[in-house]
Length: 426
Image 1 (tube, rainbow, N blue to C red):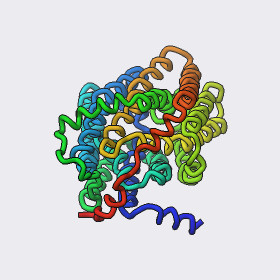
Image 2: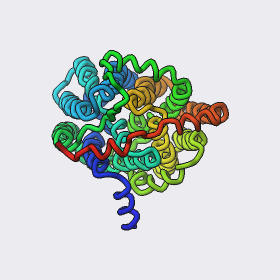
Image 3: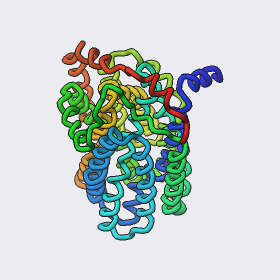
Image 4: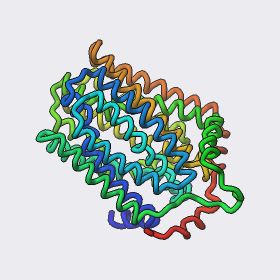
């Protein structure tokens, strides 16, 4: 066990581990509050599920969509580090706004404005990992990011559930402090990794960089992959948005028991993710994606037929296995598709796979729960998941060798030279 951990540590550079440390602390702050955000908002503003879904829609369209798109171009033009710092400061401002604002209309406006800058950091972090890690190690690297995320998610919901039962505001104030502390760490200990290539005699303007999104859109195979991935994520979204309210309203599950279900998901990922990452490495990627999505559809559908806590746990276990299969493979595929000088923009467009479901998923779920038997929601979710399964199977058949050729096309022409030039810190 110790030897395995030592080998994993040596596999990656100190620059990668510095990024993982910053990511862990940042994610820990988010894990304190995000699982309980729907509970907090419905309790503070006394709004319906449809109003809650509308808030997620506005948040996604006015903040995540703009911020993510802007962030991808900024990451490719100016680098990764500045974007990450801006995102962390905006995250602190967002958490503070949730404490001090008492009017729901002003809350909408504040979250929309701050969120534009908050989501700038996402494409930068994904691109930085691809900068630091050679292609053959990327599934493991993105799997490690999943472990870091879920290690934070193991601790966060347990602490958040206990503290939230006392006072939700304490959670948001803690996130303010954590986000600002990580921003300072990134400022002094994370160094820019944006690749520089000698064959580019003229540096493109920001306008030209932004226009590069058209090149991403013209990548037909990549866009087809994202279209199916969007359905897959739409299946997964309820775990982080609606399911806590559903379990509370329909089955009387308390905040601390819901927190344990999320921690079960996180504990499994922390303990088993690297094994699953190695299991899927080298396998046909679209078949891997189809199988993982099938587990999503199966697990979420169980909530339509299940009313006992033990079966809720089984459903979460099935969903988590699907997550461990899907997540590192999907992130690695995005990096493989992207030319080295367009990683930020490819990551940003991939962000739409999360932004669009985050915008429409909670609203659709809220409408179903407010107007129909809430259990219908999980039948709809399962059906969407199966559509994604068939989509991935179709891509496997249609893409064939074209996909494999594209996957192998983007090598790291100067990866070793880039890594050697990056000092740790300023």
